[in-house]
Image: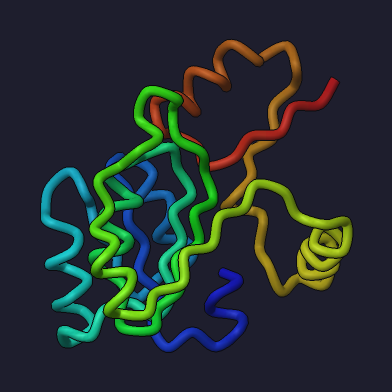
Amino acid sequence: MLAQLHGAYKTILIDVVEERLQLAQAFQPDEIINASRVDVVEEVQKVTQGKGAHVVITANPSPTAQVQAVQMARKGGRILLFGGLPPNQSSPPIDMNIVHYNGLYLIGTTIFAPRHQQTALTLITSGKINTKDLITCYPLSDFNKAVQLALDGKVLKEVFFP
């Protein structure tokens, strides 16, 4: 949603869980790719007419996704690695020649500043970002049920209230 808000030419959403991809249709990405069914690098190359993606954001603990991010980025592309890897899988086989010769920017992050949170809250309260399809609220008494729904990929984000 933020990429679209900032004028992204095309947004491509990739996941391995079909249910999450179905839920994500509400946000109207230009392309939805199920990574469990196709080669995502090939698909992104098709969608971008062989140029690759300008910006790739990996928001998961997947070494494979980080390798694929480097492979699908266009020359001069930016890759945001927003999601740490499990300790025993924290050294994915990224081809650093691709990074070097394509002039890629690898950006790792885990924390945002308070101003980022303020910006997010402003976008939500102004209605520019729709949280209705993103966040599902549950009473704390439904914690076990709601967590299982999240683990099964049936919801995107959850909030619990007392």
